[in-house]
Length: 171
Image (cartoon, rainbow, N blue to C red):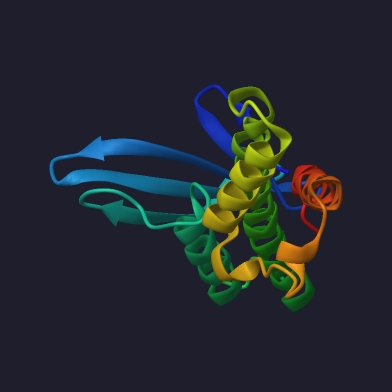
């Protein structure tokens, strides 16, 4: 897990090896810089220039991949260490993606729950919740064929279970 240190983000590969990342303005935009430090000594450095904004899944993703590849070519990493560093970079991507998915699902659930406050009847509340879940999840949410024949209590119970699932962290 990366941590912040005096305006820099540090990705620790093991007890003696870490990537220290930061950014700086340039005449054409900005760039990300990553330094590989082994026992506190900078052994190699990589940079990634950007003219506008980055299209990364998480901050410093591209420059970290470049740094690991550079360290592998310079034989600063053993094969196992390079694989472990790449795994760390990939796992950071997964954590960021999971957090993003969890935030989106949570927002869908919160907006859908507003139906309980905004709608005067249970039927209208269920209709609101259903619309919001469908709008948020799109084709990923399929209503059972017999939905219209269910009682409002059954619809409400099922929708509440969906909203409860949206609160759960993604696996």
